[in-house]
Length: 118
Image (cartoon, rainbow, N blue to C red; front, side, top):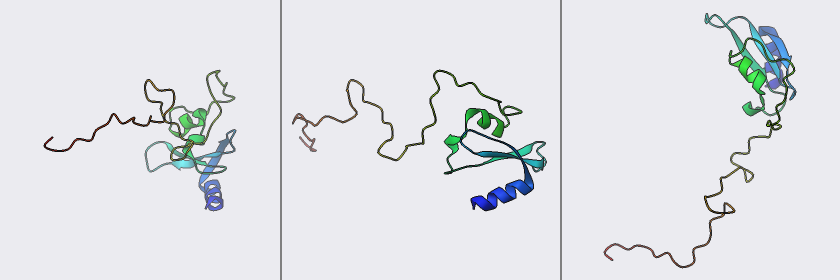
């Protein structure tokens, strides 16, 4: 499907640019369905993962900025992209308040189940 999408993207749109991950960005040649603006899309270089789109291209895709930012300066607090780990063993889970790890301590026999009528 990716080869077909690349071919059709070249016919129906014009190539705008490429980001550091190798994703290619396109814009339609004509206005999209009379909305007065052009349709924009991305053809991913690898796995289709929306979190791979950098901020400067995300703003352009959603018509927030008129053109992608050229040579963005990485800020000191920014980290390199990491794949979305949701649903895997490496997913982040918060540490419960007052505990040093996110493993629940084993009950020490202080729990007594409730029974109706007692």
